[in-house]
Each structure stands twice: as structure tokens, then as C-alpha cells.
Length: 152
Image 1 (cartoon, rainbow, N blue to C red):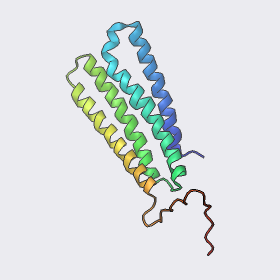
Image 2 (image 1 turned 30 degrees about the vertical axis):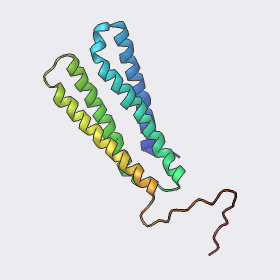
Image 3 (image 1 turned 90 degrees about the horizontal axis):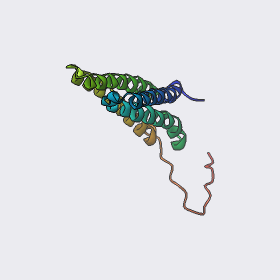
Image 4 (image 1 turned 120 degrees about the horizontal axis):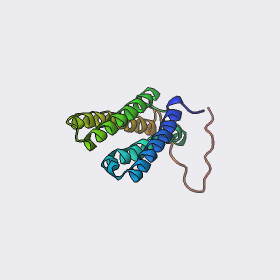
């Protein structure tokens, strides 16, 4: 079963892919829209690629490591920070393309929100890979041997 934030990251990735593709088509049909290339790039890379990787990572890393996700709450916060940050960044890039004076403030705010989300992602997965504090780390068996269950 997938956690809500895993599904949300995957659906957000698909949404950002659709939006990035539409903007790309718009740039093809209206060459004046080429000023929005940075928005298109971020919609596809941070939106589609990074959101998809995040959703998959939150689902598989606990299974690969055998440890529970260190903080589902942080993963949920990452989802909100990442999507809000990207939306604000895209708005900043759009304002930049129109030479609006506020573009730097808007872009910077979006960047800070996105960076906060990335920080949560890194910390949460790092702690998940290490496992709960105090939990023993199993050592791999030497090649060619079978590990026998420990009898109590």
C-alpha cells in the first residue's frame, strides 16, 4: 500500500509533466514565449523528474533498507514545500519573462521553499537508510554461506 504522499508526489509529477509539455507546445507555436524557457525547464525537471524520484524513493527506500520511513510527517511537508515552491518559482520566471520588477523576490521565495523541501527529503531518507537509533545493523553473510536464523 502506498502512503498518501507517495501517491501525491507521483500525481504531482504527472501534472507538472502535462503543464511543462503544454508550455513547451506554446513556445513552439508562439516563439515570443521562449522567454518562459526557465519556467518550462523547472516544470519538467523539478516538477516531473524530481517529484517522480521523490515519490518512488519514499516508497522503495524503506523496503530496500528494511527500516520504516524515518518521518512520514516530514515527507508530507516535503510534498507541500516542493509543490508550493515550484509554483512560486514558475510565477517568478513568468514575471522575469515579462520584465516585472518583483520577479526576483517571487523567484527567491519559491527557491527557498523548494530548498526547504529538498532538505526534508535528504534528512528523511538519510535517517531512513541509517535506521532507527540504537537498532543493530545486520552484517552481510560472506559469499557462499547461508545465514541461519538466531534461536532465542
